[in-house]
Length: 284
Image (cartoon, rainbow, N blue to C red; front, side, top):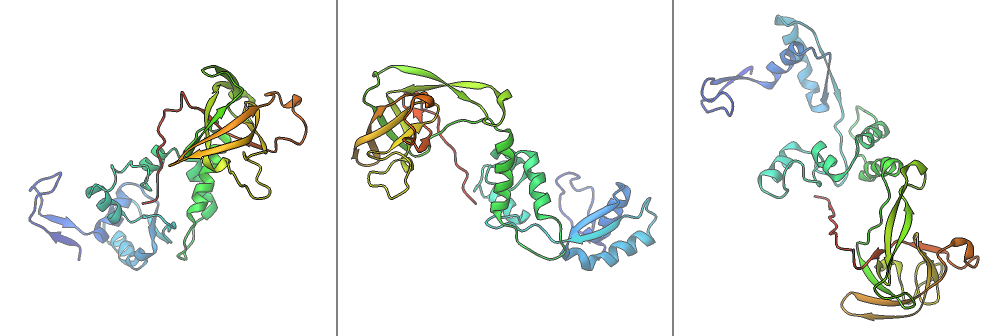
């Protein structure tokens, strides 16, 4: 079948045309007119290649492109079917093609994935004729490696645990200096706020910790990043998820600390200024 006849309005041409060429008929001619030299298709088009080449030999086209078939990209935990993605957009399950959860260029860009990460991921998985599945962790690793080299560092607390510095003046806010990138001195520094009431991650504190737990716990000393070393001799919890720990400050200068004391380091956020919401992008 080379043509289809359909008496319906076209979104661009209206009712001007009622006859439309099939994909197999138009594929080779479009490639030849546009100057395509290598037409890369997925494996299901391998059976269509004889018709692709026959039409190019029989029709007066300006060039003779070649069709090559490769295995499609299959990514675990990721929907890549255009039909399914279109249905997700039409049914309102996502905000659009640029939704951060969508595996589209616009979606990846909005999620913060740089172009270099996509190129690194493609180099890792390569191109093959055999059908295979690529782990989504490989894509995430490529994005993380690229971001690690270029992104400026910031601190955020997603599951907050409120801590109170008992021997720090209430209401006082201190500006501390923090580096923007540990491996790039040219990135400069920034100022972060520190006060008596701060938030740390809930996972960074345990009342009854196991062995080799180097984060905050009663009697264990840790260093708040870019701030002071602290310990928590006592703690109390109030439901449902509001927690309170009493901390006692030590020196902010690492050279003045006793060796071997602070074995862990945690990030924090000042309670008075921790107002920005965090957006997470779960899998579709």
